[in-house]
Length: 114
Image (cartoon, rainbow, N blue to C red; front, side):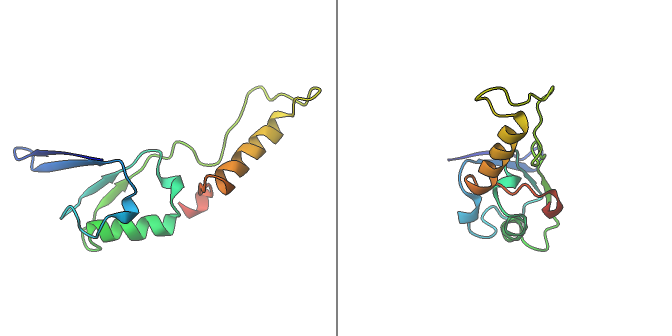
């Protein structure tokens, strides 16, 4: 879905999208000055993300992209628990969790790509 708010007094337009941004045609919204995305950037390969945003905004627009990264491949439990009987150690649980994010969910967790 999409929600749009416009204000002539502020010379602004806000559009909230809840769909795959990769399916949007170039410059659908005209001049874009700022993209804001949350819990999003690690779901799309960084090169694909930048390429598509530049197409949406127009390569010469100078648009800014604000995407706080609230997770970047690092999770910790404190204090760390060691294996006890059939319960695996925290390090193995977290390793399996990160592997699932990368392989099953398609997350891009390498901070050097960002």
